[in-house]
Image (cartoon, rainbow, N blue to C red; front, side, top):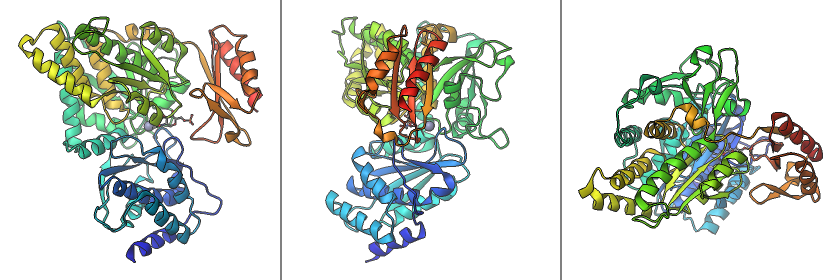
Length: 548
Ligand code: 16G
Ligand code: ZN
């Protein structure tokens, strides 16, 4: 009936060009923005079906290409829990995005609905929240996504406007939990929990003016604009936004933003000699990544970088301190806690050693938020970060209940160290985005912890010294011919390659090297670490030669 007609009509409206192949990849479909309409339309269909499958729960769809150039765009689906779409649905998403004819698309949808037990045109209506970043193709693609969603009879598409990616994840999560879920609610929650955390700072005397100053590189994206909106509500922080995303300030992600600063280790545009000694942070284009940096000297463009690994280490120290106050160092007190840390192969070896020396459980997963997040959910408190600055702290629901009842029980002794420590953890769980990594809320947790510890940027930087590292891209005929295992730290195919890598690595002190096919580009990536920059470069180069 009309369901079939709608699917056929939209498929002929947005045909897949011959030879194009879309792959959902690590973080959704991505390509040049002008070529994205077919994939976006079909992602809209997938999102609506996903909502139906989950009994009409809200799911999300966001139009963004994150840190990629402004001409690119992409689409990503947010599951009803606020996390990434279930991986079990990726093969169907790929098949649908590449369905060559309207009829092929129709058959795929009907068959998939049948296999998944989804009744089209039945009891539930699908609900999809949409958002986009600031890219010029975003408005059009959002409209295309709505067309895709609307093919599923009875579905409701809600355009939430221009948002950071983590804001949309947060909204989907809250909505399905029956919690307040508007953008104003998001801002209120983070501003209030931030203020609350600051109030819990030990012998709080306030800090000096210098430490209140923070300059944020917004990558000329959406994060800077949002930060401008809330910064006046943020207690005890003097925030200056550069590359703010306002008209005329610069181009999205071009020589600025977290990806640029972390990979190139040089100053973003708009920063210079006058910023020596000031704490600086950098977001990526959709504000789900965060790094910090310092301008080292007036005459240099290099930076002292604090990457995701060091942000993770700071959070870990803070949480551990609170848990030690509550539980004692043997973790046998009032609130025994399963506390775990999740990293990827890209984590600097010095960070992993630092964390292990604290006696923590450190586990590794493949690259990509969906893998880290899933692993972190296994703990009462699970912290994950990629070196590139994407990460968050997850507090298990049941654990938060235990924590809240503990604070209630201790309230007679309000002001006691244990009550304060437990209250800090509650505030942190409300500040840091529980759905996905979030540059704005992550930055506020960093700021609160630095104030708590009365630490300067330098104290933080000195936690450990990063081992020099080098990354290379290698173009190969078929990147899927490289297959990895052990969280991408070892190659299992082609056979013999791992042995060649091992032979190179033994020649270097603190040497470590791995290769993996990229999930977002048609290249193989090589990462090498060693005790000097030259050694890391030479190790990367020799391994790259074995890959070619
Ligand atoms: C995506 C991932 C990021 C990962 C990167 C790796 C999300 C939200 N983003 O940007 O986590 O580090 O891909 O790219 O999952 P690569 O596979 O090309 O190295
Ligand atoms: Zn991003």
